[in-house]
Amino acid sequence: MSDSSAVAVFGSSQTDPDSRKWAEAERVGRRLAEAGFAVITGGYGGTMEAVSKGTSEAGGHVIGVTAPPLFLGRHGANPYVAELIETEGLTRRIGAMMERAAGTIALPGSIGTATELLIAWNVNHIVRRNGGHHVPTVAVGREWRTVVETLVSEVDAFPGDIHLASTADEGVDWMLEQLKNH
Image (cartoon, rainbow, N blue to C red; front, side, top):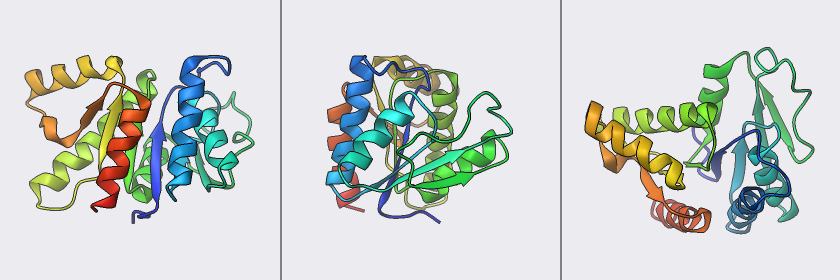
């Protein structure tokens, strides 16, 4: 069951606190909180922590969905998580995030972020085919453009199930517009 007031944000666990990507992720969290949305992340460090920090510092609610049995080297959620949901593995973790999200934003990341993005895209594919309402999904950055273009051309994925944005601010603008109309 999605929470119409929550947005899931996916991103790298390796984002450095002194980087431009960290600052952008913080801004994403802050902007979503200022617009009245809770934020759902994977609950750990990197981009997840930056988004959580931005959300928390703007007075928003942060939901962290972790998977302790999978990530044995990670000890607890980042300090900005207000509501912790612990799951048993990767698929349950992503499922818990998707069930609660009215929309999803994929920031730059690696294979884990790609997995989250592809599941959101696949959910939209299934929902569209069954006449339901899609979950607004935006992929931010040039990294995802190649992935999307390849899947559209090679496996006939529907490009309208995912929106590409060049910048984090553009992605948040698009998301807020979509959620306003939902």
